[in-house]
Length: 44
Ligand SMILES: [Zn+2]
Image (tube, rainbow, N blue to C red; front, side, top):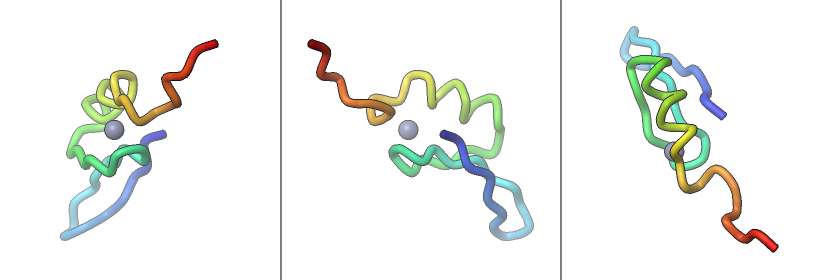
């Protein structure tokens, strides 16, 4: 999930899974889709 946070009078979008921060919500969401930490990769 992408969370919005404000720092230094700027709005940032942070990937909850790995902590990466983006200044663009689109970039954050794009990253989230590809974030390896999003869910366990164990498929049975
Ligand atoms: Zn991430």
